[in-house]
Length: 488
Image 1 (tube, rainbow, N blue to C red):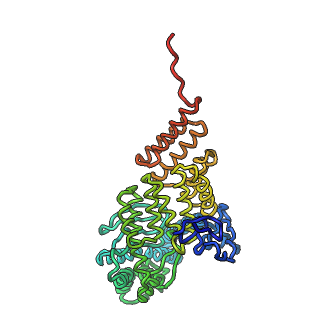
Image 2 (cartoon, rainbow, N blue to C red; image 1 turned 180 degrees about the horizontal axis):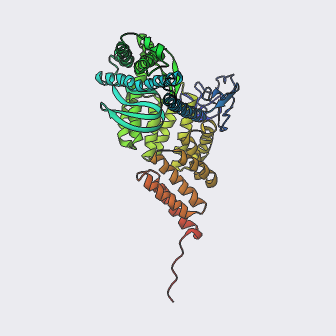
Image 3 (cartoon, rainbow, N blue to C red; image 1 turned 90 degrees about the horizontal axis):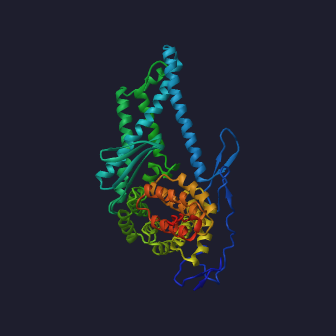
Protein backbone atom coordinates (compact mmCIF):
# COMPACT_ATOMS: atom_id res chain seq x y z
CA UNK A 1 0.00 0.00 0.00
CA UNK A 2 1.07 3.59 -0.69
CA UNK A 3 0.13 6.36 1.73
CA UNK A 4 -0.98 9.72 0.34
CA UNK A 5 1.10 12.67 1.52
CA UNK A 6 -1.85 15.02 0.99
CA UNK A 7 -4.83 13.36 2.70
CA UNK A 8 -3.31 10.32 4.44
CA UNK A 9 -5.31 7.65 2.63
CA UNK A 10 -3.78 4.22 1.90
CA UNK A 11 -3.83 3.34 -1.81
CA UNK A 12 -3.05 0.14 -3.74
CA UNK A 13 0.52 -0.16 -5.01
CA UNK A 14 -0.65 0.12 -8.63
CA UNK A 15 -2.59 3.40 -8.05
CA UNK A 16 -1.46 6.30 -10.26
CA UNK A 17 -3.40 8.92 -8.29
CA UNK A 18 -4.82 9.04 -4.77
CA UNK A 19 -8.29 7.53 -4.67
CA UNK A 20 -9.30 10.00 -1.97
CA UNK A 21 -8.05 13.40 -3.12
CA UNK A 22 -7.13 12.59 -6.74
CA UNK A 23 -3.58 13.94 -6.45
CA UNK A 24 -0.93 12.45 -8.76
CA UNK A 25 2.56 11.88 -7.28
CA UNK A 26 0.84 11.45 -3.95
CA UNK A 27 3.16 9.00 -2.20
CA UNK A 28 4.32 9.82 1.32
CA UNK A 29 7.69 11.49 1.11
CA UNK A 30 6.57 13.78 -1.69
CA UNK A 31 6.08 17.40 -0.70
CA UNK A 32 2.43 18.47 -0.59
CA UNK A 33 1.48 21.25 -2.96
CA UNK A 34 2.11 24.68 -1.46
CA UNK A 35 -1.08 25.94 -3.06
CA UNK A 36 -4.03 26.00 -0.68
CA UNK A 37 -7.32 24.43 -1.87
CA UNK A 38 -9.46 26.83 -3.93
CA UNK A 39 -11.88 28.92 -1.93
CA UNK A 40 -15.56 28.04 -2.04
CA UNK A 41 -17.53 30.17 -4.55
CA UNK A 42 -21.23 30.80 -3.94
CA UNK A 43 -23.94 31.39 -6.54
CA UNK A 44 -25.59 34.76 -5.96
CA UNK A 45 -29.06 33.42 -6.80
CA UNK A 46 -29.55 29.85 -5.55
CA UNK A 47 -26.73 29.64 -2.99
CA UNK A 48 -25.02 26.65 -4.65
CA UNK A 49 -21.31 26.35 -3.86
CA UNK A 50 -18.23 24.93 -5.55
CA UNK A 51 -14.45 24.80 -5.27
CA UNK A 52 -14.07 24.02 -8.98
CA UNK A 53 -12.21 26.93 -10.65
CA UNK A 54 -13.98 28.64 -13.52
CA UNK A 55 -17.27 26.74 -13.36
CA UNK A 56 -19.20 29.71 -11.95
CA UNK A 57 -19.34 32.86 -14.07
CA UNK A 58 -19.54 36.52 -13.18
CA UNK A 59 -22.25 38.26 -15.20
CA UNK A 60 -23.54 41.79 -15.21
CA UNK A 61 -26.90 42.34 -13.57
CA UNK A 62 -29.63 43.59 -15.89
CA UNK A 63 -29.66 47.39 -16.20
CA UNK A 64 -26.99 47.72 -13.48
CA UNK A 65 -23.26 48.27 -13.29
CA UNK A 66 -22.80 45.58 -10.62
CA UNK A 67 -22.07 41.91 -11.32
CA UNK A 68 -23.28 38.63 -9.83
CA UNK A 69 -21.72 35.18 -9.65
CA UNK A 70 -23.91 32.44 -11.13
CA UNK A 71 -23.76 28.65 -11.15
CA UNK A 72 -24.30 26.93 -14.54
CA UNK A 73 -27.99 26.28 -13.80
CA UNK A 74 -28.77 29.87 -12.81
CA UNK A 75 -26.77 31.16 -15.76
CA UNK A 76 -28.82 28.90 -18.04
CA UNK A 77 -32.06 30.18 -16.50
CA UNK A 78 -30.91 33.77 -16.94
CA UNK A 79 -30.05 33.07 -20.59
CA UNK A 80 -33.46 31.46 -21.22
CA UNK A 81 -35.17 34.44 -19.63
CA UNK A 82 -33.16 36.85 -21.79
CA UNK A 83 -33.97 34.81 -24.91
CA UNK A 84 -37.68 34.80 -24.08
CA UNK A 85 -37.66 38.59 -23.65
CA UNK A 86 -35.71 39.04 -26.88
CA UNK A 87 -38.15 36.82 -28.79
CA UNK A 88 -41.12 38.77 -27.41
CA UNK A 89 -39.41 42.03 -28.34
CA UNK A 90 -38.81 40.84 -31.91
CA UNK A 91 -42.40 39.66 -32.31
CA UNK A 92 -43.69 42.92 -30.86
CA UNK A 93 -41.38 44.89 -33.15
CA UNK A 94 -42.79 43.13 -36.22
CA UNK A 95 -46.41 43.54 -35.09
CA UNK A 96 -46.01 47.24 -34.31
CA UNK A 97 -44.35 47.83 -37.69
CA UNK A 98 -47.31 46.24 -39.48
CA UNK A 99 -49.76 48.34 -37.46
CA UNK A 100 -47.82 51.50 -38.33
CA UNK A 101 -47.83 50.58 -42.04
CA UNK A 102 -51.58 49.95 -41.87
CA UNK A 103 -52.27 53.21 -40.02
CA UNK A 104 -49.75 55.38 -41.90
CA UNK A 105 -49.06 53.70 -45.29
CA UNK A 106 -47.03 56.67 -46.53
CA UNK A 107 -45.11 57.16 -43.29
CA UNK A 108 -41.50 56.04 -43.15
CA UNK A 109 -41.32 54.68 -39.59
CA UNK A 110 -43.48 51.60 -40.19
CA UNK A 111 -41.52 50.49 -43.27
CA UNK A 112 -38.19 51.17 -41.56
CA UNK A 113 -39.13 49.02 -38.57
CA UNK A 114 -40.56 46.29 -40.83
CA UNK A 115 -37.31 46.07 -42.81
CA UNK A 116 -35.34 45.68 -39.60
CA UNK A 117 -37.76 42.86 -38.70
CA UNK A 118 -37.25 41.30 -42.17
CA UNK A 119 -33.48 41.35 -41.73
CA UNK A 120 -33.75 39.54 -38.39
CA UNK A 121 -36.19 37.03 -39.91
CA UNK A 122 -33.80 36.43 -42.80
CA UNK A 123 -31.02 35.56 -40.32
CA UNK A 124 -33.28 32.96 -38.69
CA UNK A 125 -34.36 31.49 -42.03
CA UNK A 126 -30.74 31.26 -43.20
CA UNK A 127 -29.66 29.12 -40.23
CA UNK A 128 -31.14 25.88 -41.58
CA UNK A 129 -29.51 26.09 -45.05
CA UNK A 130 -26.17 26.77 -43.34
CA UNK A 131 -26.48 23.68 -41.13
CA UNK A 132 -27.72 21.55 -44.03
CA UNK A 133 -24.58 22.55 -45.91
CA UNK A 134 -22.51 21.06 -43.08
CA UNK A 135 -24.69 17.97 -42.65
CA UNK A 136 -25.15 16.95 -46.31
CA UNK A 137 -21.45 17.39 -47.04
CA UNK A 138 -20.63 15.30 -43.97
CA UNK A 139 -22.96 12.54 -45.18
CA UNK A 140 -21.34 12.60 -48.62
CA UNK A 141 -17.86 12.29 -47.12
CA UNK A 142 -18.75 9.33 -44.91
CA UNK A 143 -19.09 11.13 -41.58
CA UNK A 144 -21.75 10.13 -39.07
CA UNK A 145 -24.45 12.83 -38.86
CA UNK A 146 -26.42 12.59 -35.62
CA UNK A 147 -28.73 15.57 -35.88
CA UNK A 148 -29.22 19.25 -36.63
CA UNK A 149 -30.40 21.51 -33.84
CA UNK A 150 -31.87 24.95 -34.53
CA UNK A 151 -32.02 27.13 -31.44
CA UNK A 152 -32.52 26.37 -27.76
CA UNK A 153 -35.35 26.27 -25.25
CA UNK A 154 -38.56 24.25 -25.67
CA UNK A 155 -38.55 21.88 -28.62
CA UNK A 156 -41.28 22.97 -31.04
CA UNK A 157 -41.09 20.00 -33.41
CA UNK A 158 -38.69 17.46 -34.89
CA UNK A 159 -38.55 16.28 -38.50
CA UNK A 160 -36.19 14.46 -40.83
CA UNK A 161 -34.75 16.56 -43.64
CA UNK A 162 -32.94 14.49 -46.28
CA UNK A 163 -32.94 11.72 -43.69
CA UNK A 164 -31.25 13.90 -41.05
CA UNK A 165 -33.08 14.30 -37.68
CA UNK A 166 -33.66 18.02 -37.15
CA UNK A 167 -34.95 19.68 -33.97
CA UNK A 168 -36.51 23.13 -34.07
CA UNK A 169 -36.51 25.00 -30.74
CA UNK A 170 -38.34 28.15 -29.70
CA UNK A 171 -35.31 30.45 -29.42
CA UNK A 172 -33.95 30.05 -32.95
CA UNK A 173 -30.89 32.28 -32.54
CA UNK A 174 -28.23 29.78 -33.69
CA UNK A 175 -27.80 26.34 -35.30
CA UNK A 176 -25.59 23.31 -34.63
CA UNK A 177 -24.81 20.16 -36.59
CA UNK A 178 -23.62 17.14 -34.61
CA UNK A 179 -21.33 15.12 -36.84
CA UNK A 180 -18.22 13.00 -36.25
CA UNK A 181 -15.78 10.96 -38.38
CA UNK A 182 -16.09 7.19 -38.53
CA UNK A 183 -12.34 6.81 -39.05
CA UNK A 184 -9.24 9.01 -38.84
CA UNK A 185 -8.09 8.66 -42.48
CA UNK A 186 -8.39 11.96 -44.36
CA UNK A 187 -9.99 13.69 -41.40
CA UNK A 188 -8.51 17.17 -41.82
CA UNK A 189 -9.37 17.54 -45.52
CA UNK A 190 -12.88 16.15 -45.08
CA UNK A 191 -13.61 18.25 -42.01
CA UNK A 192 -12.34 21.36 -43.80
CA UNK A 193 -14.81 20.68 -46.62
CA UNK A 194 -17.66 20.10 -44.14
CA UNK A 195 -17.03 23.34 -42.26
CA UNK A 196 -16.58 25.32 -45.48
CA UNK A 197 -19.81 23.96 -46.96
CA UNK A 198 -22.00 25.81 -44.43
CA UNK A 199 -20.23 29.08 -45.20
CA UNK A 200 -20.51 28.40 -48.93
CA UNK A 201 -24.29 28.05 -48.65
CA UNK A 202 -24.52 31.51 -47.07
CA UNK A 203 -22.21 32.90 -49.75
CA UNK A 204 -24.51 31.44 -52.44
CA UNK A 205 -27.62 32.95 -50.81
CA UNK A 206 -25.78 36.27 -50.55
CA UNK A 207 -24.72 36.15 -54.21
CA UNK A 208 -28.12 35.01 -55.52
CA UNK A 209 -29.95 37.71 -53.56
CA UNK A 210 -27.51 40.35 -54.75
CA UNK A 211 -27.92 39.13 -58.34
CA UNK A 212 -31.68 39.43 -57.92
CA UNK A 213 -31.09 43.09 -57.13
CA UNK A 214 -29.03 43.56 -60.27
CA UNK A 215 -25.84 43.65 -58.25
CA UNK A 216 -26.81 46.88 -56.55
CA UNK A 217 -27.87 47.70 -53.00
CA UNK A 218 -29.28 51.08 -54.01
CA UNK A 219 -32.67 49.90 -52.74
CA UNK A 220 -31.39 50.31 -49.19
CA UNK A 221 -31.83 54.05 -49.64
CA UNK A 222 -35.59 53.47 -49.81
CA UNK A 223 -35.70 51.40 -46.65
CA UNK A 224 -38.39 53.66 -45.18
CA UNK A 225 -40.69 53.42 -48.24
CA UNK A 226 -41.26 49.71 -49.01
CA UNK A 227 -40.38 46.13 -48.00
CA UNK A 228 -36.87 45.02 -48.99
CA UNK A 229 -36.79 41.18 -48.70
CA UNK A 230 -33.81 40.61 -51.02
CA UNK A 231 -31.78 43.34 -49.36
CA UNK A 232 -32.61 41.70 -46.01
CA UNK A 233 -31.25 38.35 -47.28
CA UNK A 234 -28.07 40.03 -48.50
CA UNK A 235 -27.44 41.76 -45.17
CA UNK A 236 -28.42 38.70 -43.10
CA UNK A 237 -26.08 36.32 -44.89
CA UNK A 238 -23.24 38.85 -44.90
CA UNK A 239 -23.64 39.09 -41.11
CA UNK A 240 -23.76 35.27 -40.73
CA UNK A 241 -20.57 34.93 -42.80
CA UNK A 242 -18.78 37.62 -40.78
CA UNK A 243 -19.75 36.15 -37.38
CA UNK A 244 -18.91 32.58 -38.41
CA UNK A 245 -15.55 33.47 -39.95
CA UNK A 246 -14.48 35.36 -36.82
CA UNK A 247 -12.19 32.77 -35.13
CA UNK A 248 -13.34 32.53 -31.52
CA UNK A 249 -15.11 30.35 -28.98
CA UNK A 250 -18.65 31.21 -28.00
CA UNK A 251 -20.75 30.09 -25.05
CA UNK A 252 -24.07 28.47 -26.01
CA UNK A 253 -26.59 26.59 -23.83
CA UNK A 254 -24.92 23.32 -24.91
CA UNK A 255 -21.50 24.56 -23.78
CA UNK A 256 -18.44 26.16 -25.36
CA UNK A 257 -18.49 25.97 -29.18
CA UNK A 258 -15.88 26.91 -31.78
CA UNK A 259 -16.97 29.08 -34.71
CA UNK A 260 -16.41 27.85 -38.26
CA UNK A 261 -13.54 30.30 -38.61
CA UNK A 262 -11.69 28.91 -35.58
CA UNK A 263 -12.24 25.34 -36.78
CA UNK A 264 -10.87 26.18 -40.23
CA UNK A 265 -7.80 27.81 -38.66
CA UNK A 266 -7.10 24.73 -36.53
CA UNK A 267 -7.66 22.44 -39.52
CA UNK A 268 -5.17 24.43 -41.60
CA UNK A 269 -2.64 23.85 -38.81
CA UNK A 270 -3.47 20.13 -38.99
CA UNK A 271 -3.93 19.91 -35.23
CA UNK A 272 -3.50 16.15 -34.56
CA UNK A 273 -5.62 16.26 -31.40
CA UNK A 274 -8.62 17.55 -33.35
CA UNK A 275 -9.04 14.25 -35.23
CA UNK A 276 -8.82 12.12 -32.10
CA UNK A 277 -11.18 14.41 -30.16
CA UNK A 278 -13.76 14.07 -32.93
CA UNK A 279 -13.44 10.29 -33.10
CA UNK A 280 -13.72 9.97 -29.31
CA UNK A 281 -16.85 12.08 -29.48
CA UNK A 282 -18.31 9.70 -32.06
CA UNK A 283 -18.40 6.81 -29.56
CA UNK A 284 -19.76 9.02 -26.78
CA UNK A 285 -22.58 10.36 -28.99
CA UNK A 286 -23.44 6.88 -30.27
CA UNK A 287 -23.79 5.67 -26.68
CA UNK A 288 -25.77 8.75 -25.63
CA UNK A 289 -28.14 8.20 -28.56
CA UNK A 290 -29.15 4.82 -27.11
CA UNK A 291 -29.06 6.07 -23.51
CA UNK A 292 -31.65 8.70 -24.43
CA UNK A 293 -33.91 5.92 -25.72
CA UNK A 294 -33.22 3.79 -22.60
CA UNK A 295 -31.62 1.09 -24.76
CA UNK A 296 -28.54 0.27 -22.68
CA UNK A 297 -27.66 -3.07 -24.36
CA UNK A 298 -27.26 -1.21 -27.67
CA UNK A 299 -25.10 1.50 -26.06
CA UNK A 300 -22.53 -0.82 -24.47
CA UNK A 301 -20.90 -2.11 -27.73
CA UNK A 302 -20.21 1.47 -28.80
CA UNK A 303 -18.67 2.28 -25.42
CA UNK A 304 -16.48 -0.84 -25.57
CA UNK A 305 -15.33 -0.02 -29.12
CA UNK A 306 -14.37 3.47 -27.98
CA UNK A 307 -12.50 2.14 -24.95
CA UNK A 308 -10.46 -0.20 -27.16
CA UNK A 309 -9.09 2.90 -28.91
CA UNK A 310 -9.13 5.30 -25.96
CA UNK A 311 -8.92 3.26 -22.72
CA UNK A 312 -8.35 6.36 -20.55
CA UNK A 313 -11.22 8.45 -21.88
CA UNK A 314 -13.20 9.78 -18.92
CA UNK A 315 -16.54 10.10 -20.74
CA UNK A 316 -16.42 6.55 -22.09
CA UNK A 317 -15.35 5.05 -18.76
CA UNK A 318 -18.05 6.98 -16.94
CA UNK A 319 -20.69 5.80 -19.40
CA UNK A 320 -19.46 2.22 -19.08
CA UNK A 321 -19.76 2.45 -15.30
CA UNK A 322 -23.29 3.86 -15.56
CA UNK A 323 -24.23 1.02 -17.91
CA UNK A 324 -22.92 -1.49 -15.36
CA UNK A 325 -24.94 0.22 -12.61
CA UNK A 326 -28.15 0.06 -14.64
CA UNK A 327 -27.46 -3.62 -15.35
CA UNK A 328 -27.19 -4.27 -11.58
CA UNK A 329 -23.45 -5.05 -11.84
CA UNK A 330 -22.67 -2.75 -8.93
CA UNK A 331 -19.19 -4.03 -8.02
CA UNK A 332 -18.08 -3.82 -11.66
CA UNK A 333 -19.44 -0.28 -11.86
CA UNK A 334 -17.50 0.75 -8.75
CA UNK A 335 -14.25 -0.66 -10.13
CA UNK A 336 -14.77 1.19 -13.41
CA UNK A 337 -15.37 4.49 -11.61
CA UNK A 338 -12.29 3.93 -9.43
CA UNK A 339 -10.23 3.25 -12.55
CA UNK A 340 -11.53 6.45 -14.15
CA UNK A 341 -10.56 8.38 -11.01
CA UNK A 342 -6.91 7.43 -11.64
CA UNK A 343 -6.81 9.04 -15.10
CA UNK A 344 -3.89 11.43 -15.29
CA UNK A 345 -4.80 15.14 -15.29
CA UNK A 346 -8.48 14.45 -14.64
CA UNK A 347 -10.43 17.67 -14.19
CA UNK A 348 -11.93 18.66 -10.82
CA UNK A 349 -15.40 18.50 -12.39
CA UNK A 350 -14.84 14.92 -13.55
CA UNK A 351 -13.41 13.97 -10.15
CA UNK A 352 -16.56 15.07 -8.29
CA UNK A 353 -18.81 13.36 -10.85
CA UNK A 354 -16.89 10.13 -10.26
CA UNK A 355 -17.15 10.50 -6.48
CA UNK A 356 -20.89 10.86 -6.90
CA UNK A 357 -21.02 7.69 -9.02
CA UNK A 358 -18.79 5.76 -6.61
CA UNK A 359 -21.14 6.76 -3.79
CA UNK A 360 -24.12 5.45 -5.75
CA UNK A 361 -22.28 2.17 -6.39
CA UNK A 362 -21.46 1.90 -2.70
CA UNK A 363 -25.06 2.14 -1.50
CA UNK A 364 -26.31 -0.23 -4.19
CA UNK A 365 -23.72 -2.82 -3.13
CA UNK A 366 -25.27 -2.49 0.35
CA UNK A 367 -22.04 -3.27 2.21
CA UNK A 368 -21.67 -1.72 5.68
CA UNK A 369 -17.96 -1.02 5.15
CA UNK A 370 -18.76 1.23 2.17
CA UNK A 371 -21.41 3.38 3.83
CA UNK A 372 -18.95 5.92 5.23
CA UNK A 373 -17.37 6.36 1.79
CA UNK A 374 -20.80 6.77 0.17
CA UNK A 375 -21.74 9.41 2.73
CA UNK A 376 -18.46 11.31 2.36
CA UNK A 377 -18.25 11.16 -1.44
CA UNK A 378 -21.89 12.10 -2.01
CA UNK A 379 -21.52 15.00 0.45
CA UNK A 380 -18.42 16.28 -1.39
CA UNK A 381 -20.14 16.01 -4.76
CA UNK A 382 -23.21 17.78 -3.38
CA UNK A 383 -21.06 20.57 -1.93
CA UNK A 384 -19.55 21.27 -5.35
CA UNK A 385 -22.21 20.29 -7.92
CA UNK A 386 -25.56 20.67 -6.17
CA UNK A 387 -27.32 22.21 -9.19
CA UNK A 388 -27.00 18.94 -11.16
CA UNK A 389 -30.13 16.79 -10.58
CA UNK A 390 -28.20 13.49 -10.67
CA UNK A 391 -25.83 14.72 -7.93
CA UNK A 392 -28.74 15.80 -5.74
CA UNK A 393 -30.49 12.49 -6.45
CA UNK A 394 -27.49 10.44 -5.35
CA UNK A 395 -27.18 12.40 -2.11
CA UNK A 396 -30.87 11.83 -1.44
CA UNK A 397 -30.50 8.10 -2.13
CA UNK A 398 -27.48 7.85 0.18
CA UNK A 399 -29.36 9.55 3.00
CA UNK A 400 -32.29 7.17 2.54
CA UNK A 401 -29.95 4.16 2.51
CA UNK A 402 -28.24 5.44 5.68
CA UNK A 403 -31.54 5.60 7.55
CA UNK A 404 -32.25 9.33 7.13
CA UNK A 405 -35.42 9.09 5.02
CA UNK A 406 -36.85 12.53 5.79
CA UNK A 407 -33.71 14.35 4.60
CA UNK A 408 -33.31 12.04 1.62
CA UNK A 409 -36.95 12.32 0.57
CA UNK A 410 -36.76 16.12 0.25
CA UNK A 411 -33.73 15.95 -2.08
CA UNK A 412 -35.15 13.07 -4.11
CA UNK A 413 -38.45 14.87 -4.67
CA UNK A 414 -36.57 17.88 -6.02
CA UNK A 415 -34.57 15.61 -8.30
CA UNK A 416 -37.64 13.81 -9.63
CA UNK A 417 -39.25 17.14 -10.53
CA UNK A 418 -36.09 18.27 -12.33
CA UNK A 419 -35.63 15.10 -14.43
CA UNK A 420 -37.36 14.72 -17.79
CA UNK A 421 -36.36 11.16 -18.69
CA UNK A 422 -38.86 8.50 -17.44
CA UNK A 423 -36.00 6.10 -16.57
CA UNK A 424 -34.46 8.58 -14.12
CA UNK A 425 -37.84 9.52 -12.67
CA UNK A 426 -38.45 5.81 -12.07
CA UNK A 427 -35.22 5.53 -10.06
CA UNK A 428 -36.23 8.55 -7.98
CA UNK A 429 -39.68 7.01 -7.40
CA UNK A 430 -38.06 3.81 -6.14
CA UNK A 431 -35.96 5.70 -3.59
CA UNK A 432 -39.01 7.69 -2.53
CA UNK A 433 -40.90 4.43 -2.04
CA UNK A 434 -38.13 3.18 0.27
CA UNK A 435 -38.08 6.50 2.15
CA UNK A 436 -41.83 6.49 2.70
CA UNK A 437 -41.73 2.90 3.92
CA UNK A 438 -38.98 3.76 6.42
CA UNK A 439 -41.13 6.65 7.68
CA UNK A 440 -44.05 4.29 8.23
CA UNK A 441 -45.99 5.38 5.13
CA UNK A 442 -46.09 1.96 3.51
CA UNK A 443 -49.15 2.72 1.38
CA UNK A 444 -47.46 5.80 -0.05
CA UNK A 445 -44.34 3.71 -0.63
CA UNK A 446 -46.38 1.23 -2.67
CA UNK A 447 -47.84 4.09 -4.72
CA UNK A 448 -44.35 5.34 -5.56
CA UNK A 449 -43.31 1.78 -6.50
CA UNK A 450 -46.32 1.49 -8.82
CA UNK A 451 -45.41 4.85 -10.37
CA UNK A 452 -41.83 3.63 -10.92
CA UNK A 453 -43.12 0.50 -12.71
CA UNK A 454 -45.27 2.67 -14.94
CA UNK A 455 -42.43 5.06 -15.76
CA UNK A 456 -39.89 2.32 -16.54
CA UNK A 457 -40.89 -1.35 -16.30
CA UNK A 458 -37.20 -2.30 -16.67
CA UNK A 459 -35.84 -0.04 -13.91
CA UNK A 460 -32.98 -1.84 -12.13
CA UNK A 461 -34.21 -0.66 -8.71
CA UNK A 462 -37.68 -2.23 -8.89
CA UNK A 463 -36.77 -5.62 -7.36
CA UNK A 464 -34.66 -3.99 -4.65
CA UNK A 465 -37.51 -1.64 -3.75
CA UNK A 466 -40.05 -4.47 -3.67
CA UNK A 467 -37.82 -6.44 -1.29
CA UNK A 468 -37.26 -3.43 0.99
CA UNK A 469 -40.99 -2.73 1.23
CA UNK A 470 -41.76 -6.39 1.93
CA UNK A 471 -39.06 -6.56 4.62
CA UNK A 472 -40.34 -3.42 6.35
CA UNK A 473 -43.93 -4.62 6.18
CA UNK A 474 -42.98 -7.97 7.75
CA UNK A 475 -40.76 -6.56 10.50
CA UNK A 476 -42.93 -3.68 11.67
CA UNK A 477 -46.16 -5.06 13.15
CA UNK A 478 -48.11 -1.82 12.76
CA UNK A 479 -47.46 -1.89 9.02
CA UNK A 480 -48.62 -5.48 8.56
CA UNK A 481 -52.25 -5.85 7.42
CA UNK A 482 -54.39 -7.20 10.33
CA UNK A 483 -55.33 -10.87 10.23
CA UNK A 484 -59.00 -11.84 9.69
CA UNK A 485 -60.78 -12.69 12.95
CA UNK A 486 -61.11 -16.42 13.63
CA UNK A 487 -64.55 -18.03 13.51
CA UNK A 488 -65.91 -18.87 16.97
